Amino acid sequence: MTTIPPAELSGRYVFDPAHTRIGFVARHAMVTKVRGYFGEFEGSATIDGTDPTKSRATVTIKTASINTGVDQRDQHLRTNDFLDAPTYPDIVFTSTGIESKGGEAFRVTGDLRIKETTRPVTLDVEYDGAARDPYGNLRLGLTGSTTINRRDWGVNWNAALEGGGVLVGDKVVLEFDISAIRQE
Image 1 (spheres, rainbow, N blue to C red):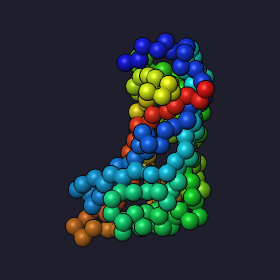
Image 2: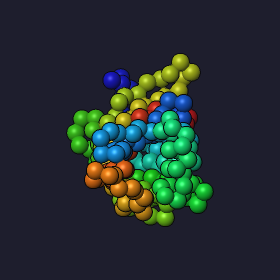
Image 3: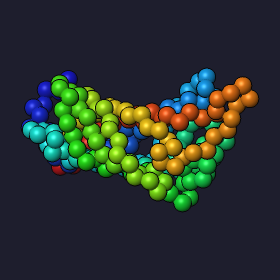
Image 4: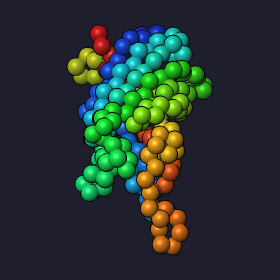
């Protein structure tokens, strides 16, 4: 855990893409889970160390950077059946509020835009600590997740399975592990 006092954490941070992961998990064929991530994104946060409820964050994810490790599946996910990356190149999250759940846990609410739909979401976030890296940068770590129904954002494609059920589950878990660097 950090030995840096919370008041000293205040400032503007940018996500370090080399040490940050924005991923997802979705049910496939009703029997397994497919995991993936987005390789291109930008994120920033303004942190108020003495009053976290005044903190704010925004993330922009490039939809074409989706990666599940299977090229054919990734190409399909980029089409209009799912994310329609050519028409909607970005997924955007903008926080609207932060509430302490006690200790290092927070509830972050915000607006998530996928394709042409913007809806509110709530993320469960853990503050993992802060430290100075070997280059003198102040870094802080955050992890969290939320579960969404992809159909709420117009991501409706599916295929029926012969024995019943569908190929792609409606619920998608969005996960993130963030390393953010304070901008001095």
